[in-house]
Image (cartoon, rainbow, N blue to C red; front, top):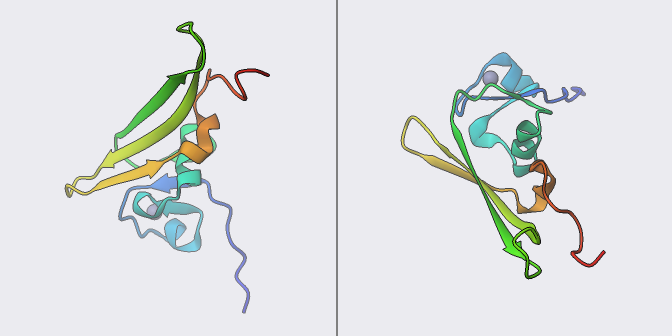
Length: 107
Ligand SMILES: [Zn+2]
């Protein structure tokens, strides 16, 4: 029997097991992938997590001036009600951060 995979539309609280999470319309935060977290930060997935997320970004200089920086990594941390800490490394999804410098500094 074939079940069509539902299109993901939201990220739910960490331990959610509602019907939407079971059929794949939502995903519990604890199971969310880096890509899904990135999509949520871009507003492509709804944030139903009820969980504060801490986003930290690291830039490096590629030239002598302070505005010559590029983004090298983004980490997202969620501290859950039960004391567990979830982290996602969005370094492969750096286009989540608006206003960043893209591409090679010498383009
Ligand atoms: Zn759910």
